[in-house]
Amino acid sequence: MTDQPSKDVVSEAKAQGTAKMAQIVYFLYLAAIVVPMANVVGVIMAYVNKGDAAPWVQSHYQFQIRTFWISLLIGFIGAALTAVFVGFLVLLALLIWYILRCVKGLKYLDQKTPYPDPKTWKW
Image (cartoon, rainbow, N blue to C red; front, top):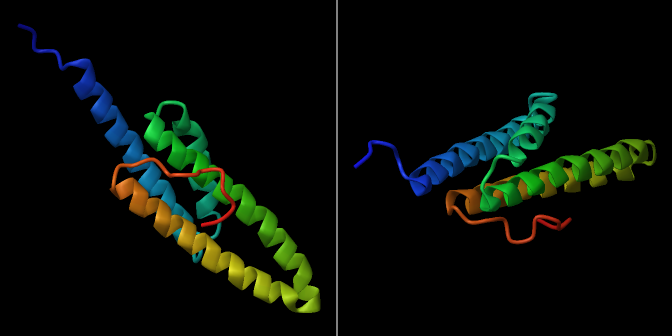
């Protein structure tokens, strides 16, 4: 009998660690609403941890990475359109979309399930 943990125990511990990092990324994304550049730190963490994560956690990292890039694109469009005032509505819609994606991602992460469609533009 050995004192070494089984592969399943090690895999589960690794999945829990990467899931905790995915949770931190979601919180950094939400913090970015009031703390500039927190989402940049979050997306870097998502890129770094994506390869080592369990498949169900990888779906969250993919979702987080897409959330960052889509929000950056829509943010630039909204900022450009503020000159004609419609940009403020675009930025408000972006804020709501961004919060909903983070909250929904946290919900699935808490349930320890993969994000159903991480490639979606919807929430």
